[in-house]
Amino acid sequence: MSKRLEPYFDQELTGEERRQVDEHLRECRTCQESFKLMERIRGAIKQPVDGAVEKEDFQLMWQNIQREIRLRESPSWLESIRVWLDISPLLQKKVWIPALATMAILVFVTVPILFKKSPSPSVLSVVEYVDSPTYNVMVYESEKPEVTVIWLFEGQGEELSTS
Image (cartoon, rainbow, N blue to C red; front, side, top):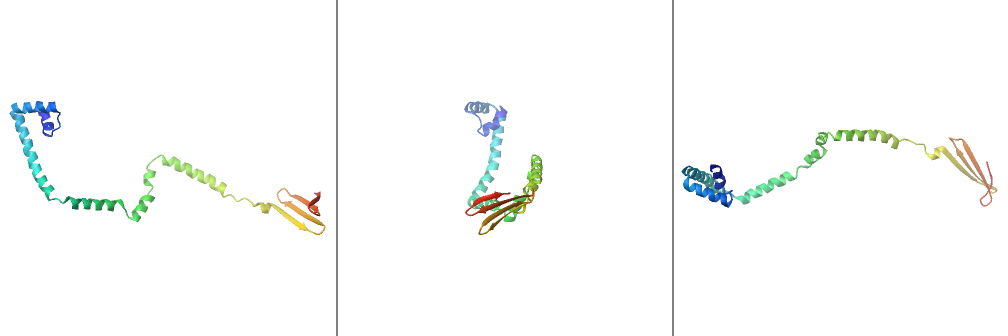
């Protein structure tokens, strides 16, 4: 029954359990003395706490707490940048290592392909057009396969020959 004395004192027992402890306390002097000791200890603790509560200005305390919360919520811009740039927590996770290695390989493979210099089409071929009173000539020359095409137009856009 002594195991139930503290929950009884703290009012944590059900109605039936509480009734059983009440009956036991009427008969057992040892448990009565333990219960009275608990009450004296509670009184010794409660009196200074109640006095401190009466003296405390909770409105001022709450204002101080709110001020501290606001100060902690808004770090300086330098601290914000440092935290934003800090990648050490990311490096602590081993899953990032293969992902970063894959990303680096992709960058090294795709960048040369994307920025590869290709000759412009104007360097590879030349088209010239000559306008005359009798014939109009258009010449197409390609450097790589060494092909030359000549169109000869007579009058209003009629084609005479192709070479």
